[in-house]
Amino acid sequence: MSESDKYLLDADTFIRAKRDHYGFDFCPGFWNGLLQAHDLKLIASIVPIRKELLKGGDGLAEWVKEQCPKTFFKKVEDVAVQIAFKSIADWVMTSSQYSEPAKQRFLAGADPLLVAYAKVNDYVISSYEVAAPESKAKVKLPDVAGEFKVACCQPFDMLRELRVRLRLSRNSFK
Image (cartoon, rainbow, N blue to C red; front, side, top):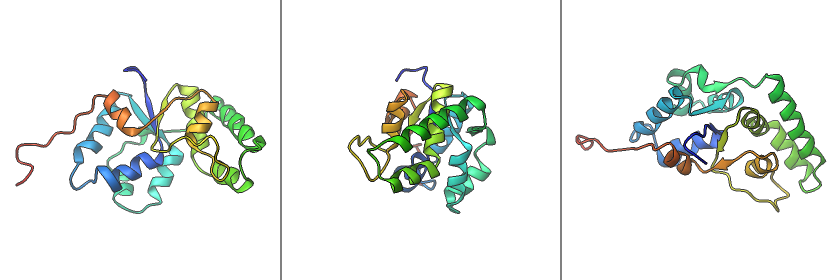
C-alpha cells in the first residue's frame, strides 16, 4: 500500500464499523471521514454493496440513503469490469478446491464484482476478511483477490494509510 492508493470497501467494512468500532452515536468522525475521503476520490464501493447495505433496514441503511452520495457506489456495468467478473467466475467455478455450495454463495454476492472493479480500476480492497487458502467451505475474498493480483488490506490499515484521525473534542462528555 502507498499514499496514492485508492480503496474499495466491502460490505463488512461498513457493517462491522457500525456494529463493533464506530457506532453512529459515539463516533461520527469515522463516518464523516469516509465521506471526506470519498470527496478526495480516495475511497469508494460498488452499487451491489450499496444494495446489500440497504437491505439491513437499520441506521447504516439510513446513512447510506441520506448521507452517502450516490457517487460513493460505483456502477459495475462497464465492459471491462464484466470481462474481469467473467474471469473471476470462471476461476471460481473451475476450482476443485471449493465445494459447489461455497462457489454458488460466493458468486451470488457482491464480492466477485468488487474484485473485478478493483482490478480494472486499480483499487485496494478494504475488508476484515482474512485469507484462508485451504478453505473448502467458503471462498474468501482475499484469496480470490490475490489470485487476480488485487491487493487487500484490513480497514484499520486503510485508515492509517489515509492518515485518518479520530479525535475527541473538548466537550465530548457534556
